Image (tube, rainbow, N blue to C red):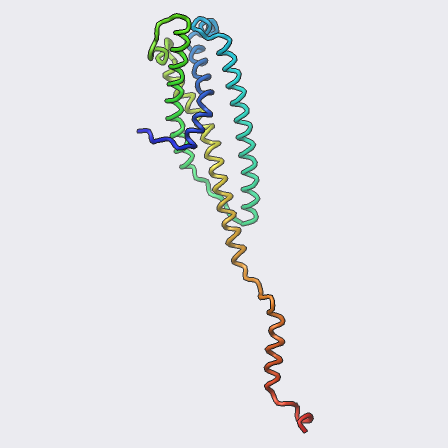
Length: 218
């Protein structure tokens, strides 16, 4: 049973679903029609608008991946610096990474399948063909969308989950190292400001209680 997605899951699925749809769609045609896949695309209503959408999705996906890598690198450098200053040693929680990938995969596969059906139904209706329903999801070849969508969704979920888990793990490392550095800083007790000046006052008070030297007393 699928759990209700968190805001982070919604964000990562929304970022990955266009690439998942484009790859699943075009690879399904390629697996079914082989060298005639381009002709099959044109025959089923995939005009220049679809090609432009594919190019836009690829460009946006590359941009998002570049920004994600930059964010990970910046957080990693910060984590390493704070950990060196605090003397802490990070521990990697791979279990949370696995949970992130599985949760993302389940929702991404469902969203991709829904987008695929909507896309194919609208395109076939636009060229005057009857509403196909669930038929496009089944496909005509041995490797159709029903197989490709889960496989591609899993690959993209692994990549996207790695970004999401990496950012969360680095944030946790930075917070832990900063807390350790703060504890070490407060553990050092500084000498009171008047410590050195206090001792002469005590000595002078004690000396004042003693009797004067005998030759002065005489």
